[in-house]
Amino acid sequence: MKMTLYGIPNCDTVKKARTWMAEHGHAFDFHDFKKQGLERATAAAWLEQLDWEVLVNRKGTTWRKLTDERRAAVTSKAAALELVLEQPSVVKRPVLDRGGKFSVGFSDSHYQELFK
Image (tube, rainbow, N blue to C red; front, side, top):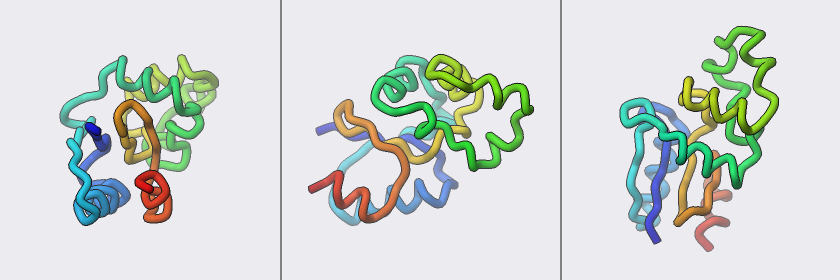
């Protein structure tokens, strides 16, 4: 199964996920969406499976730096899609694509469950 891990390389959670994947022998491609961008089709696919409130990191610095008006406007999948395309750093990281099945975030127990 082809797997892609989306994130930014300096994110501690992404680093942990990458290390976990390597240590457990899972081959994957890493997509740095700060450098490589984030395509509309990719983000839209995430939002077909994931709730926008899961995908958008409303605790992070990028979210807090948005204006009150911009934050208040994010109330739907469509609005979240536009936001993540404008500000990819607002995506909760990492996003793991396991052959078209998506998961967000990382913890050892979460990945253990995913790879049973």
